[in-house]
Length: 133
Image 1 (cartoon, helix red, strand yellow):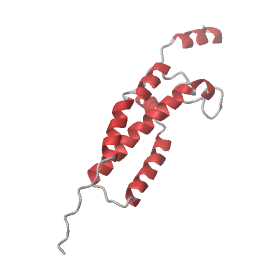
Image 2 (image 1 turned 180 degrees about the vertical axis):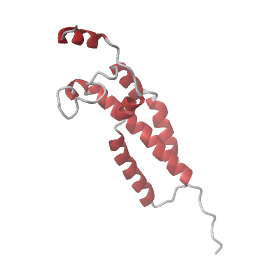
Image 3 (image 1 turned 135 degrees about the vertical axis):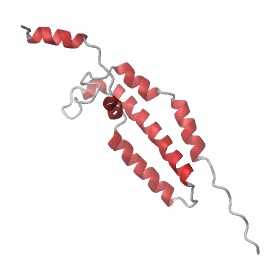
Image 4 (image 1 turned 90 degrees about the vertical axis):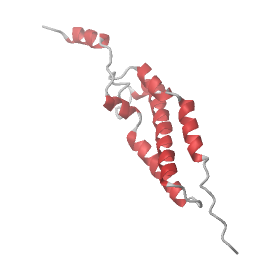
């Protein structure tokens, strides 16, 4: 027979495991989707048309940057999130994910993410051939 004190002791000794769902939760998919919607809207409203490949790569780069920023935000605010009813079920305050995993996920090659996004966002579409006058 176990007691709540013993159960709590064993629960605190368990190493949190990493699940795909918890990693996705770190990226805050709803917030990321809103940023992607505004990025896509900006691409659509841009005075110069970009190709489908460039637009897709720009959106992918934006997803990578936003997901990393969201994960770092959850890492930084994990203590505060544990005190609020709305956020205490997130992976870090709930103990389902080790803080070092969130830090790794959020800081995974931020320079590479930025370089990827920057290389796509600074591309110019090929200029149209001059029309004969």
